Length: 282
Image 1: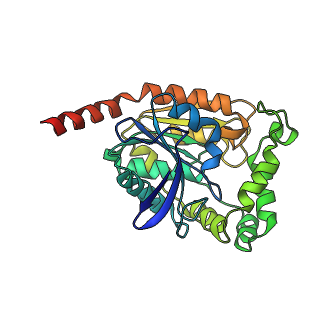
Image 2: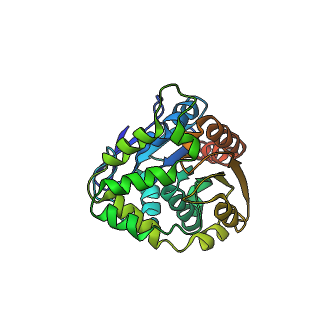
């Protein structure tokens, strides 16, 4: 699906179903240097089970135009602008890594627009190693290699994925390699500068799921659990033997956790859509 935010072309995958503002909406937000394709195992199911799905390409990523945004709060504000562009008054936000803290910021700072959030592979702070930042600034393959090595759990390095023939390390390499020059560094720098995780979690007024990997070396499960403990209405789901890329490493377990959470918290969106329809008929 192509749409525009402030005159710039944007893209979102909709899972094979037309996006409709008349159904509960879920926005899926990717991590640093990535794009909508990291949600490929989840978008189609959700789109065919009652949700309007927008797996977004953030500005400068994938098929979206513009420059990458330089702060987590700026990404959060852009998510609200994307909702406006698609005629969505309230949505559930599901984010991974950089996308998770952007969803957290959006929910804390734009509470009237967010009905629930799911944060995958998240921590209150996401410091980036200086060697990785330097490699990304130089658009070096070394940055891609470091991320691939750290982001995937040991099982992902050995194969055995439930989708026959899928090579997660090779796929991750190609995904990051196709990012435009400067995009990965901008994203990592934004993550490195983010300091408001605990404040934003404490300010949440909506239900929150923290979906974590037990073998995540980039945002360890212990750090995600500590962040969740500060949120007023949060649940934690830890996927065993899983690294940072749970949506692709453990797609079935990730989908099950997200589906349960979304189903349990769809009511507020349904009510708002019903109220809006009633107001339109009045």
